[in-house]
Image (cartoon, rainbow, N blue to C red; front, side):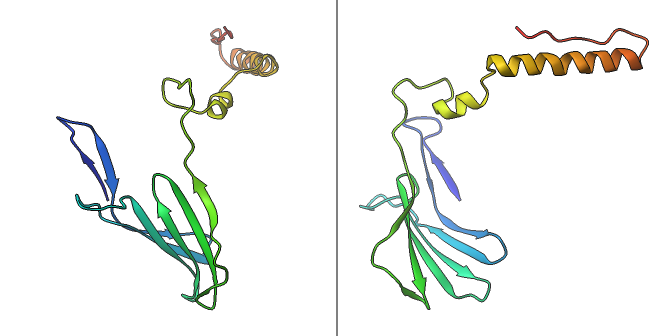
Length: 146
């Protein structure tokens, strides 16, 4: 469950709480528990989880904060195999020059139309236009690349 506070007045913020069940590749499943946040909580945004195999045996434990990082401890026969945790995910600071939708530079380049792609895009549009005009009596629309 996600709770959003101060919708009308004040600083808008949200917190997650409750249980999330994740079914993976039919061999493993995970049960994540998002800790309920309270006013007196010194360590908010906690998440803990257990990864189990198809037989219900605990394979790993997960712990962390949903807005900072998530760590994994692999277990053998229900016992932690190492005292050291593996970092699964970590929050990175936003870019110094944020975009309109706070996209990373990588996400922006996914939609970039490079000169090589422009040539191919033009050829595809031309082929579609020719095919459409050949199959109909009216002239097919052609969308030029700007």
